[in-house]
Amino acid sequence: MKLLVLTVSAGEGHNSMSRAITNYLKDTYSDIEIKQVDLFKDGDKSKKKKKANWMVNDGYFSLVKHAIGLANGVFEKLKVRDIHKPATTLRKNFITPARPYIEEIVNEFKPDAVFCAHTFAGIIMTDLRNDGNENAKRARVVTIVSDYDVAPYTELLTGVDYVITPASDFDSVLIDKGFDINKRRILGIPVQTKFSKVIDKKEARKEIGIDENKKTVMMMSGGVGFGNIAKLVLNLNKCESDFQIVCVCGRNEKLKKELETLKAKGKIKKDIYIFGFVNNVDVIMSASDVLIGKIGGVAIAEAFNKFLPLIANKKLPFQEYDNMLYLRERNACEYISNENKAYQVVDKFFKDKEKYDLMQIQIAKIRKPNASKDIGDLLYKGE
Image (cartoon, rainbow, N blue to C red):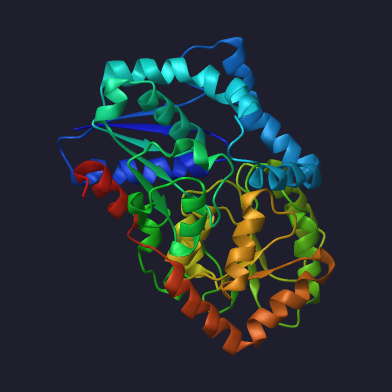
C-alpha cells in the first residue's frame, strides 16, 4: 500500500500531524510505503515556487509577528469571501507553482491513498481529479480541518473522498461550502500517541527536575516569538497563588536568554525552570496544571489528550483566535485579553475549583485521543 502525504511547513502543525499519522502507520502495518512531500520546499526551485515558500513561511511569520492586526483583518475578510468567485490570487501565488511537481509525484508514485495536511494540498488533488488525472482519481484522498474553525478556500477542495473534522459543529459550514456531509468523519486532530499516555503528575515533575509537590504553570513560546512572554512571566509575580513556572522557549534563543537574565537578577519571584528546544513536551504537560500560550489545533489536541487546561495568550494569529473563541464558548479554556492583568486570570484559575472541574468535563468531551489511529486506519483501509 502506497501513501502520499502532502504538507506545508507554515508553522509546524501540518508537519506534526503528518508525522503522527505516518508513525502510527509504520508501527502498525508492515506493507506500507510512505512518501511525504512539502508543496513548496521539495522538488523544483523555480522563482514562483521560492516566492510561494517565502510567503507561507517567512512572510507569514513576519506578518503575524509585526502586524498581527493587519494579518487577522485580512483573514477575517477571506472567511466571508464569495465562494463562487474564482480564487485567482490564491491560484496564481500558491496552487499554480506547486501543482506541476505534485502532479509529477502522483503520476510516478501512483499512491493508493493521499493525506492532505493543508488546504492547498486538497485543492491540488481536487484540481487533478477534476482535470481527469487517473492516478489522482484512483487514490483515496483524505483532507483535514486542523483547527476549531473551517479555513478560507475550503470550498475548493470538495473533490476529496473524506474530510476529517474535530467536531460536528462545523457540518453546516462544510455543507455551505459544497461538501457532501457523508464524506465528513469526526476523528479529531492527530498528534503523537505519547500525548495520550497517562503519566503520574509527581513522577513527571520528578523526571524533568522540578518540585514534585508544587502546582505548575507551563508556558510555551515556540521559535517565532509571538506575544511578550517575558512580560507575562513578570506579571505573574503578582499572583497570590503558589506555583512554579516551566517555560519552554523552543528555538527562541532570545527569549531564553532574556528569561535567564531576569531570573539571575531576581526579577522573577516565582520558581521558574527555563528550557529551550525539548523532545519531552508530553512529560512537561503531564507535570503541569495549566498551559499558557498559543493554541493552534495541534497544541490543543496535545494538551487535551493530557487533560491539561489551557489559558490562551494575547495576540493570537488567524485561526488560533477562532480556536480560543470556540473553546471559551464551551468553558474549555481561559483567555488573557490584557497581559497586565494576566495574574488575575491565573489566580482565578487556581482558586475556582468549580470552574476547573467544568473545564475538565468539557475537555473530556472535545478530546480525540485516538485521532492518529483512526485517521491512519481510514487511509489504509477506507471504510
